[in-house]
Image 1 (tube, rainbow, N blue to C red):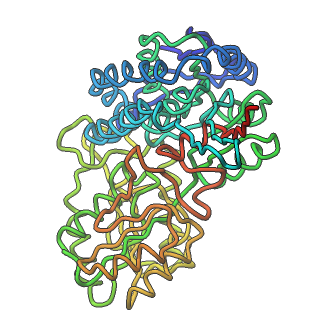
Image 2 (image 1 turned 120 degrees about the vertical axis):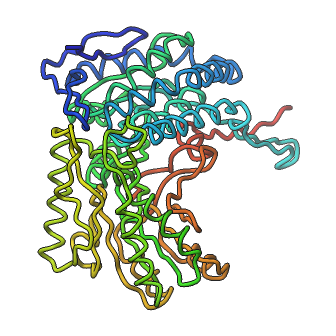
Length: 482
């Protein structure tokens, strides 16, 4: 059985860790590889390699650094289907979802190719008589990213391209549940000829995360995952003076007004709730039909959900894959049980879903609750599975109050043909990303990505202009010549 290695200082090396975890295909149960739980010594080796590479790398002109990324973007385009297939095998999402997953990552590489322009500072002559002032953007050193299981190719590419394009060096810890995509991506990165130590990869779990957060030579950490862990990363990085962007969980509300284009709105909302088996921070979770739209929205939503085809993501007929693991399946099922105990009405039950010929898959079918209240566990906590909850609102004001009552503020969407309602929703809802007639409010790579409230902890959001801000220090130079 293949045992994965770490990538440190330009070479694949065995981990010092002796504990190995199975990497499984969640649709079939097949063991694809074994991943080591690396140690703090592995992290230190990677950080020291990155630290040693930093002085020479930061001296490389930005335009030359960008040329490495041009090569990488081209290479990624050539291998997009290959990476998508790997992603589907280790994660379970459909091939189309995996293809788009990597595609959004490639877009970040493409955007980072413009770093020479994005790094430009400001200047003003004669801020006082004979005195000029300018702002320089400079790299800081070693950065690290800790990434989740739900978007194996994409999320690491929210960080890596911007870190190295701005002149920093980088250490990645991918999710131990889905390390194979990044293994192949780093093999491709090897081909573009970056100097040794500029990028490094350390597989592992909690010990690696703690070592990254506590290492004195790591200048900043990017994290994506649950809010509980995001808070811990935020606190640990703060204690050691690091920069941090920690993107946490979500409870995303989708408001559907009576004037919406109902067929399109509901179909889009269903795709939002069940895409990637609901395992994404932008997934719709709570559906709020307003006023007399309730019954029509509910009935249409149930009808579309019943058309979803559960199965192996490599089957072109599949529209909903498995959840990531047996443990995660049990977690989602426990939320469904909790919803029933609290008095919510189960309109569509996906608990006993099966797929012929695949008895070992982690299957949960589309599930729908109604009569959900904001104080219920299923109404306030992130389930991260194919479960949608319906709440009632008599008008837009009440719908916004329901959304704003959540501790999270990642994304929120409204479906309407009324510009005034859309504008009011966008202005008042407490969410970092807002969709108008869009169920997955995912910003493009050249805009920042991130939420509000308990969905984001730290200094900046991810990618776009926020990425440049995170990876650079602004230095102000005030000069006078006699």
